[in-house]
Amino acid sequence: MKANKRLFAWIVGIWALSSSAASQAQDFALLWDRTPAAEDIYVELDALFLARDETNGTTIAALNSRGQVGRPDVLVSEEVHFDLESGFRIAAGAALSERQSLEAVYFGINDWTGDRASVTRPINSGLRITAASLAIQNFATRVSASGESELHNGELNLRHRLRDCSCTLQTTLITGFRFIHFGDQFDVFALAPQPGPAIATEQNTVETDNYNIGLQLGGVLDWHVKNFTLSATVKGLMYANAYDSVATNTLNDPNGFFRPGQTSRVTQNDDGDVEFGVGADLGIQGSYWLTEQLSVRAGYHLIVLGSQAMGSQQLPGTAVAPALGANTPNRLSETTDALFHGPSFGVVYAW
Image 1 (tube, one colour):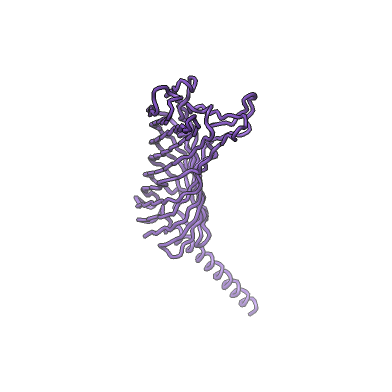
Image 2 (tube, helix red, strand yellow; image 1 turned 90 degrees about the vertical axis):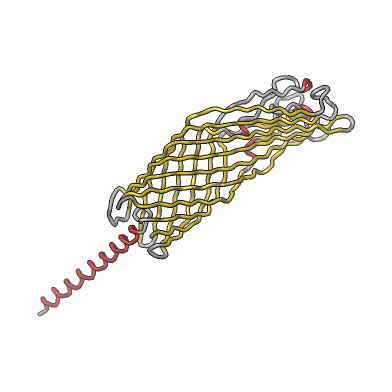
C-alpha cells in the first residue's frame, strides 16, 4: 500500500513538473510568435534622441603671443557641441515566410544646433588671434564658431530567423540596402576694429551634404525571459558617399583696409567628390510585451559613419598677406568620421 502511494506521489510530481515546463515553453512560444520576425505585419514607432560628434577636430583660431609660438587659448571645432536632439524612427514589416520578413525603416533628426564657442583677444594684451580661414585674422578681437546638422536614414531589409523554435536565445540575420543623408554647416565669424571708428566683419560658412548609398549586413541576438526581451543589434555598412561642399566667404570692410577700393565682397567655391566608406550601427534594446500584440521598449544606439565631409574640415584657407585682401578658395577637402549616439523610447504593434 505504501509503495502504491509513493508511486502515485511520483506520478503526480512528474506531471506537475512537465506541466510547468510545458507552460513555460508555451510562454516562450507565444512571446516568439509575436516578435517582428515571426509576425505577418508589424509597426514600430520610436522617439529618438541623438547627439553628434566628430573624431578629428580642427583648430579654428588661436590666441598667440606676438613674440612666442605658445597658444594660451585655442578655439577648436569640438567646442561647438551638438547635444541630444529629438527625432523619430518608424519601421514597418511583413512576413514572407515563417522565418523571413521584409522591413522598411526611416529615422531622422531634422535640425541640430551646435553651441556657439569663441576666443577673444584681451584689450592691450599684446596678443593676437590667428585663424587660417580668415583674411582679417591678425586684427580680429573675437572669433566665434557655430554650426547646424541634420541626419536622415532609409533602409530596406530582409530579416531571416536562423531557427524556428521557442528558444531562450534567438538569432536573426539582416541584409539590406541603406541610404543616409548627413548635412552639416559650420560658421566662423570674426570682428576687427578699424580707425574711424569702424568694425570690419568676416564670416566663413561651409555647407556640406553627404549622400551615402550602400549595403548593410548584420544581425540581432534576442534573449527572451517570459514577457521581456533583451535585443543586441550589430550592422556593418559599406557605401559610396557622393558629397558636395560649398564654402562662402563674406567680408564687410568699411574702410577698404583688407581689400583696397572695396568695402565688401562675397566669394564662393563649390567642391565635391565620391569616396567609399564603411560604418557601423550598434544598439541594445529592452522590450516588454503588454499583450500578445503590443510592447513598449527602450534602448541606446551608436552609429559611426566614415568618410564624411564635415563643415569644420572643409574650411577655405588664406594664402597671402591679409593686407592684400585675398582669401583663396583652397579647401582642405578632408573627410572624417561622424558619430551619432543616444537613447530611444517606443512601442511595437504586431498582428
